[in-house]
Amino acid sequence: MTAHDFGPLVLGGNTFGWTSSRDESFAVLDAFVAAGGRAIDTADVYSSWVPGNSGGESETVLGEWLARRGRRDDVEIHTKVFALDARPGLSAVNLRAAVDDSLRRLQTDHLDLYYAHRDDDAVSQEEYVAAFGELVAAGKIRAVGASNFTAERLRSAVSIAADLGVTAFTVAQDGYSLVRRDYETTLRDTIAELGLVELPYGALQGGFLTGKYRPGVEVDSARAGNATKLLDDPRTLALLDALDRVADARGVSVAAVALAWLRQQPTIGAPIASARTVEQLSHLIESFTLELSAEELALVGSPTAPSA
Image (cartoon, rainbow, N blue to C red; front, side, top):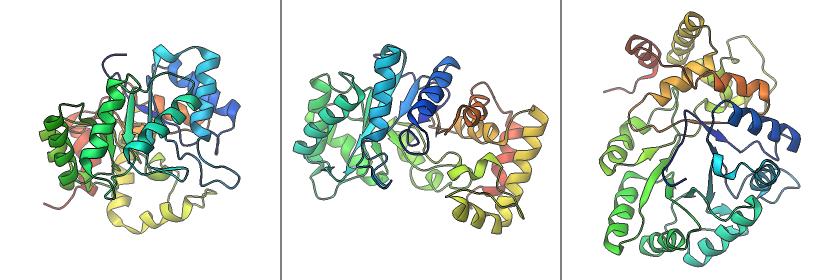
């Protein structure tokens, strides 16, 4: 692929080799592509937080699927560098080593998008901007992304790339959802001004925006503690009511409405969301063709809108 084709949703690969077994991961990937999905997001650090894992598990599962299915030209593969203990930071030396590790695990000769998973203030921006540009020139990566950067550092990185004559960041990835909307006031104007595309993570806020968390309902999930705290906020309860109304009227899931709202926001290329099973994926797929009206967008967006 020479130009990005993100599709309506980017599939998050954080569950592969963690909460999704190899077979479950393959089934989710097969169903995602069959439904028209085209881009898959992972990172070298997934899932090093699991006892017995060391990182690279998600990339390895995804690489095995690519090798088994022969679908490399049908999908975009996005991964990240910075946070893996064995390959920490954004030094030029580390970027060269880390990209080769990721390519080997993914069983491919190029990445469609390679992110700095975090900014690295221990390395000069000139060094890592030039190193990413070197990887593009070598054909190992097609595009460069920045995740969790400040507006100021995005501006300087893009300016440095122009000065050096190398490929600049063209994609950003930051936390953004109907209950986490600081992106709108801290980054969105800069993303738009620089002409970047935002692919937001946390689009379903750890499962909260699937609608399964309700007052008085106990959910057996590792994330339940954080999610249930959101129920203490009257704005969030009003949001759930609005999501219910639109989902019921459209005959779709709450998750599909939340994802469609996010996809239709300014600067957004596609939201990122993951699914542990094919059953969970079905709710994400519902969002692919869901276009909310201006009235529906306002109804869903107003309860949690940032204060002016």
